[in-house]
Image 1 (cartoon, chains in turn yellow, green):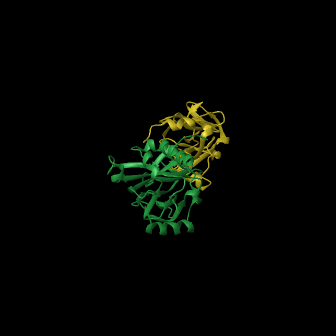
Image 2 (cartoon, one colour):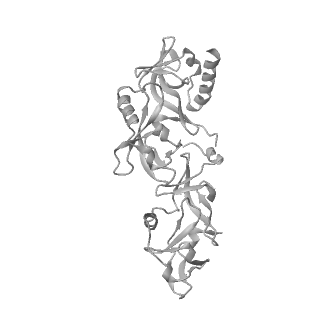
Image 3 (cartoon, one colour):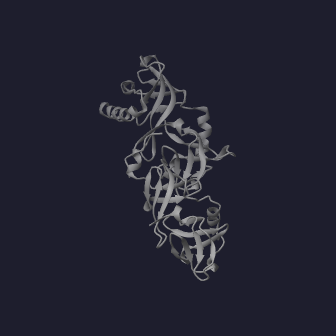
Length: 151
Length: 195
């Protein structure tokens, strides 16, 4: 298991050329958020998870620098603009209760699957993640949420 | 499904963001609550745009299209819930003429309990009007002049001028919002057993 904040800032290396192709800027996830589907490695550049060979403490290694690509759709463009960033994002349950803000994303470096999201009010399991937008992360309500103090 | 229960003043909903569950976007915020004229129901919301370009929106949000009302946001399934709903827009125009706020609360014994200052909505998942905040009249001495909460029956008549309630409601008046939840259940039980 790995924390997204540890991976962001890591250098990105090409396995084919041993050249540095960039630095991890942010992770892009699917909808609903279950796994990391791509990493942003440069100002307008992405690498799909499928092209990643390894995610380690010192580097993210990709197959080949030719796998670096530009944003392909509106959602990817929004992600690259920072609208869909995790850290600091408001967390709302689907019942409309605020559950703090995102502090960390835990993921499995083997396949990119999300394990949990840490928030200022505690961890949220990946199965409860519903949607990530520019305003908030929507998560499924759980019984424990109701114990939060009133505003 | 959770058994969570929230009691909210309808006026507390004003300014709350309207957020899509499918995309996590704040597509509007509550401008005003639209009340029914034929009964005490809350029909929906008029909306303002979010952000520094905020201002009234032509589109409205009907109760039927609200997925949940929480402590911090009004949740809708998709942005499509915010529409130019003709029925609700008609009710918005009608409610400008006949607003439950400011109405006198009159018992069926012909006594005035006070004046409505807010509507109390109980939310389990979907909201229901369960009571009113009123400024108590002389009948409610020693609470006269203070804000108290009165439960409402499942059905009651509202004219826009007055709110008719059974005289027995006087026994179920509470000083705090949290106490209203229990009072509503006791009051409605009382009505069922005496009718």
